[in-house]
Length: 193
Image (cartoon, rainbow, N blue to C red; front, side, top):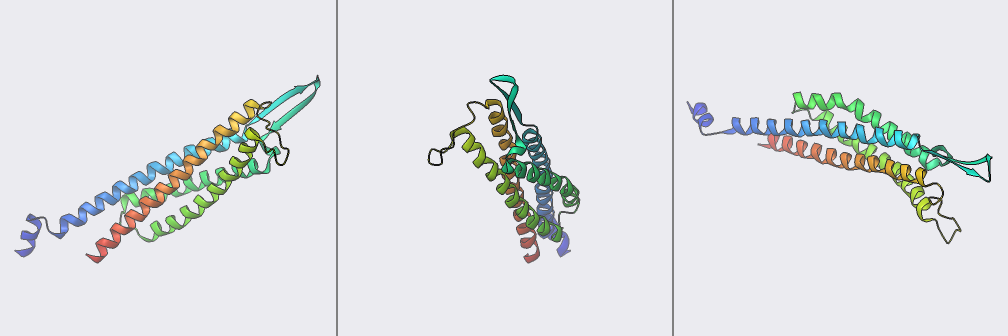
């Protein structure tokens, strides 16, 4: 009789299902953010990997060519974005498992650790490419490096545009880590109650 009275007044059973439902919502948001991360990092990798511009010089036989692989930082950027995109693809099944089993703790903790590692890797690649893009746009008077974006305008615009998806991926990682931390803290509260 006591159990039925608790259920009618909204006892502990209704709190557990509300938390489980909210963790499912968090897991669904995690899945959506991972798909957004795939699009951003894949787009950045493709945009930077296909960046190239050729300028004629005096005659049509002598040309100056700028490609992404002329700069080691841009090569790092493409490789890092490809690795992070593959990581996002590989973690989608775990995100789906978290939607079905919102009480999974071990896999969430593993994802938080791996997401943090990938966040650091993606930040390093994006920062390296950003420094080169900055130098290409502004140059450095102290080192006598001239800005090359006046001549290679298309190359610089495409390289600058490819940074957007990568920084979007960084924001996605931050949000995914925060969502996982919220889900884990709700599970911790459920265990204590």
